[in-house]
Amino acid sequence: MSKKILIKVPCPAIGDTLCSTPTIRKISKSYNQKVDVMAMRPDIFERSPYIENLLPFQENVEGYNEVFDTFVRSIKTNKNMDGGNFYDIPMEIKLSNFEARQIHALSVGISLYPDEMEYDYFPSKQTKDSLKIDNNCIVIHPTDSWPNRTWPTTYWQRLVDLIKTHTDMKVVMIGKSHKEPVSNKEGQIVKGLIKLKGIDYNYSDDTSGNQEDASVLRPISELYHVLNNAFGLISFDSGPIHLAGCTDTNIFQIGSSIRWEKTAPYRKGTQLYKFHFIGSDCKIFCGTDPKYSVKEHGTINSLPYYPSCLEGYSRFKCQPGPDEVFNTILKNIKNG
Image (cartoon, rainbow, N blue to C red):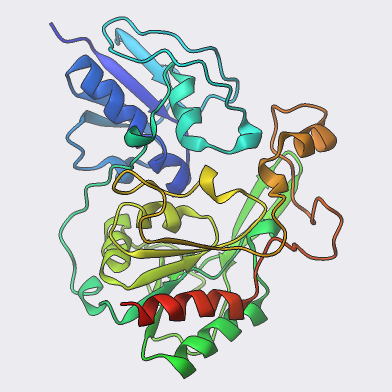
């Protein structure tokens, strides 16, 4: 007799939510049954063959034999689960290491091998809009975000100008067209698209045509098809990078203080499939080094905050310039 199993995913962001899909798949396969999922982003899980019911997120639930809370901020030791067939691998994963896939898994008492780390996403059929995008298009995600993952507008404009001048590629822009305040215990930023010239297709998440009106949001499935149809995506570590990891497109990730191995998607059993990391001379990756968490917070159980470079430089030296990014893109265009 099947158990009633619920998995709770308390993440509002695309990337963090996608990072839960390997854990959901592993639990479903281990119990040999579908599970219910309660999520803040249920659209990520639509059409999943591992899920019986999708439910809106709430804290307190009843009526289940097993309830698994993912992305728990205090990671407990691994445990074998009744009815499951899990490997009990001792693994010390702290939030300062930023490996969200393992955080989801360890939260429910399991861990993931590299060949279990690929994301699941099951898109709906393409729309007419996404069919406009083809292999002669390159997608950019130019947003204001946390300072360690934000380029100046001049850098993004320089990159667009280089693409338009030296290639035949059309430039597609994605992102949140409306401004969105985001807070944590250290401070607040306002996320949103950076306005640029020379954009061929605007696929921001507002389909109303009014960049100040977020009343009509673009479906995540449409964004998937835009990415899958295009030659590649250029972005800092972000939700679209993770979604692109469900496609066959090239990923050009702009370097930041986060070590790329902690966030890069797995495809075909590796993080290197069509993945191109463009870094800089700074190889410290302070955002994923526990000693900086101790320096900032007194404990390794916390993420450092990034109002400025943690090494004290006037800018984030871990970020490359637009010319370095373009040269990597151009090399891959020429190589087909």
